[in-house]
Length: 547
Image 1 (spheres, one colour):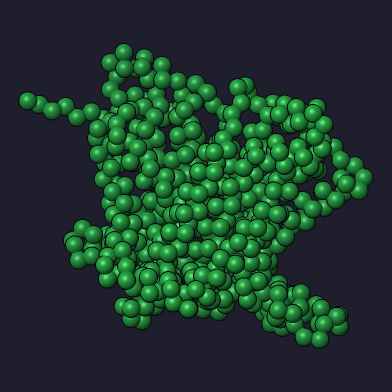
Image 2: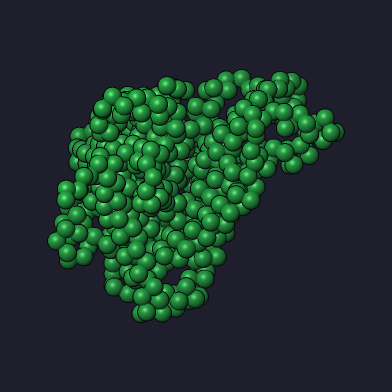
């Protein structure tokens, strides 16, 4: 008896093999190592030690502080942009995206030159005679909080703004007709409606600030869980230190997952729906002191979020900058240096091309498979691909490091060659392509495909000739956003790279920690330009298309 295998079956088998090998296996291997009988005992001893409790207290303090501050800044910022007429709003919205295009530790480098003990602000205050000794703006937990608040608040603002766009104006009008004050209307109507966006921003910021090790290391603050985990694993002084680092990482994973599922449950309990297409909220014109205050607040926060990136550009042009508020000599040699050191550029080009190609193929095929077919395995494939959105980079990095160092031919080959870099990058950042592909395919009428089937077209050719031409722009937009995240990836790749595999972001971090800030800043500017151009193209591709 001959068994017929369809196009969808082949795709499903290949996707299943991918998610099992590159998502489930590394995470399961890492987890089982920790919860094994001997490992579990060491894990409990580690997380109950006085040192761990102190590190945890500091990490929780930093994460909650950053989350609270970005919430206090991001929600009013997004609400003001959405509700009021602000001059240059389109430009402000575009610029709001820019700070999220480069890793936050780049902001730490810039703020050292601006707010360090002998940075621009302290030197200007000393020269003016306003202070007698430098003010410690940066070095300590408060410095980590400051850097991450400035660089992460746009994440909150973007999520809240997107939620505000979906609000039905009639709901707020109903509250006003019942005599609700603006504050009451916001707290009882608007805030519950934007809760999903707010909580998404809260989760993203808490998760990142809790597991970020690069920013604290640049600031010189090691009394946090993430930097200690990185140092213990990366330096590999002893097997015991490596195990302790892995236990810290596993604990952080448990905390992040607990926060995610708690927030997801809350969002489901507070779900709202409208029976008609929402009427957009009209922008209000403000004048006088109130209008000036709103505009000043928006422009000020935007300027503060862009300041680290502007300073990175100044640092990249500096040749001599020591004990002076600004560089005393400028040069383009830093850019010449990074452009002639071809290894990081070549590696980034190769890894990002292969990883982006994987995101495009896997994202489009898996979305189509989930939407157009029914099979129990579809849920597993979609769930494993989607879970990479919530798994912290430090967890992905250490999982790949352990799982692909086994002395098994295929696994050892993957782990010992550079091919592991694009595979990890694609797996970590595929969710952007996946969600954009899913949303785009929802707009394509199934009748087009059904007509092709009636005419005898094969499923594979229907996908290539009918589906892809109509969905290509949305899928490409998601793929470009994946590309932006891929070239800026550090937290996972720093665990698995070997000498000679450096990407632009890894080399940037190496230059900072090696005491070459001008070279590091030049790499940061290069990343900023690449990300900015990619974002511009992606936003132009995202247009309403219905077929």
